[in-house]
Image (cartoon, rainbow, N blue to C red):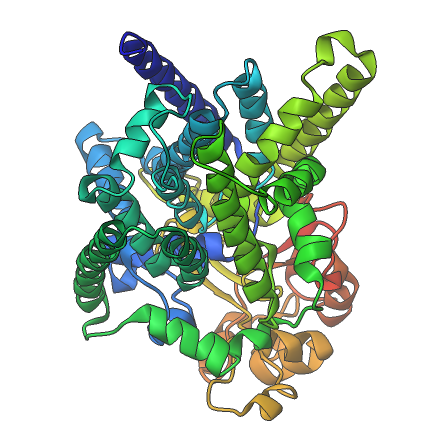
Length: 581
């Protein structure tokens, strides 16, 4: 048995290298936009940390109200600074530096994702090893399903969940017929050395996303309820306190350095979003959302297998330590309870999004793995199942490719266009063009779009680009009843674009064609926004913009595909850019 350890280590190494290579390619190939938090709750504050208050980063209200832990963006800030130092040592061009700064956080995210994938594989291999051929199939399915979700802020939250799960087997018997890896895990399950890493990761996950407390409260309560050994209970509790205190101390120190005062973001997060109900400002969802939409979107073709796995995991029946598969059944039961507790708790909150249950994804993959492997075990002999397997894999590959290269790519492509326009105005840039300086040495741009429709400084890069966009910050000083009637800036604009322009922009007379004093007029009215060189909006708004700005100095200069469909009517169609001529 001991002779198998080097082989297992080599296999684990090979698996991790394969996963890392896959994730690096995946991360660097993503050309689409998923949701705002992947930028505004991570890369934007990280950009400010790395390059200062004048760097042009967009800091949202959550950071001003101390709702977010700075631990997560601090990691990306370190990557930005390191990438900048490397660019300085290599003396690269400005365009190359911008490309490296774009790629650097993607590489970090790929490493985080690959680590999560690896521990998902490790958890599955720990309990499913007796089934020959299971792991290869499980890994294929895990890869295909994972890639359907573009990179997001929730990555660290997801990928600090699985390593903890792997280190929390229930108390078992040394006579259980497992490989050495399982025996080793059982040896350390309730020893302090075996608990420090998973408990520390659990604490980090809860700091990053406070709702992760639900997952670990469910698992811990189950463990304590099923453990009648006082010494083990004491060890678990004391280790949890020690690890939690250590992580909390580090978190408080980091947040003190970032915010300039002592704050505890998880409490602020829960207070604003749950007690004050601010989360509801961003939308209310029906009670069945996670069951009828959230979980299907999360699992796609793995949904039926996860359902079967949950059914079996929650009804282990009469179980005894001496029975074969005891550890597997008890672990799956703990994981299934965590899934149920989390989904039910999140259902009780009125504002629901599929990303809120992302930390459950690796757990659900592991639960789905055995039913999946059992169903396709006879694939070589069963042409019907072989055809179904090919169909499921094809569906996942299509979804992965579509969300990676097609869906919502225009809102990212337009930022590249604007960045390249700025590079054409930099004398030391290979793209420099004197013609581009006609309207000024730096790009100015306004986004007539719903708030947070695009990445921001992480993609514009250059602080010289002066940009503004419509906002949608919640009215924190209003009651819940008053918030129901509140309209943010984006709402007001879309209710009547012409009125908003009249109230907030300089006179349209100042941008009429062939008006000699247009530039002077634009400079005189400091109370309103100056008309920028570039206007960016969705195709849906194009007829209105054409009517408002007919006869002005603006003409279309760029158009990019964005989506074939969108659930928000305001975000439908291509991305259109008008430039001052």
